[in-house]
Image (cartoon, rainbow, N blue to C red; front, top):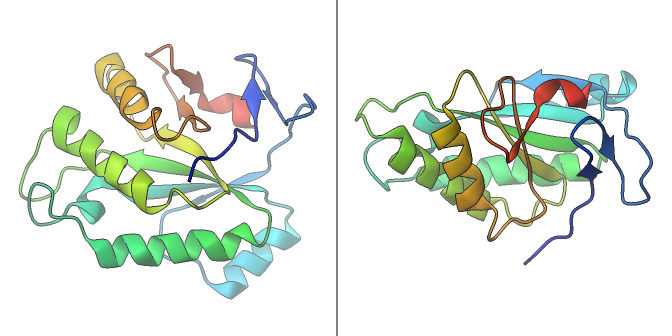
Length: 172
């Protein structure tokens, strides 16, 4: 299921499909779930964008390509519930290494790809943001790995080192 891009950018501003500038009011989510009360509070505060932190170590806990499908199914369900509220989501991908080790450039990127596959039908996911300092090589690899199946995604980083990435501050 391919999705169309909802937003576009000139590198300084995010625009909707009619080229109107978008003003995001955002919040960070670091938990695996969001309660109804928290969601209601976000709506009352007019939040329209969530930076939802997802740890590589939560997705690929026990070994290479051993993905936690229960976590991913639960996460997808959370995203689908929020979709009804017209709140956009950016996956804040954190390369926190799992206890078994792994390589960011290989395993971390593949875990992000697997996550994107599991949430591909969530229309409110507009892209990935990288948590922390990550090299241009890893930023480029992430975008080049996800883009073929997720052309509508945008990519953000506090320190964009890759031409695929935009500075996170354009979201505020």
